[in-house]
Image (cartoon, rainbow, N blue to C red; front, side):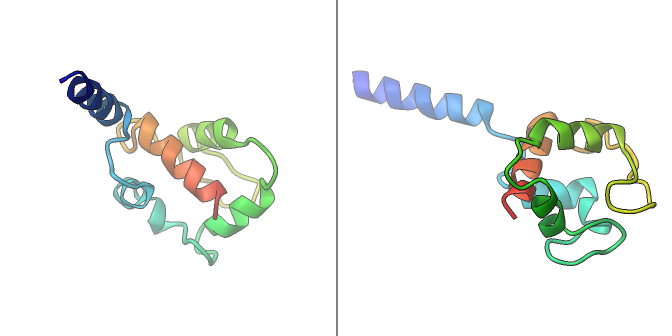
Length: 104
């Protein structure tokens, strides 16, 4: 009985802390990221592979998360990235997406 309660508590905690989407790809598709970015080729914005290469070896999750929230330009060319608020992608989904991009 005790192990069942522990397992139930652990499962509940995992569900409550999980991002709204099961995977970062779904979150990025819903948020519109894929309209300007691709995994391995430049579209309007840089490929995720190019982003990962630029920030390789750095702990850039917080910096890139802030850049997505506020928008920006100049790191990969003159075309600006508009800001993406929490109404487009939740904090948890954004963090998962950035972490996945950095692993590309």
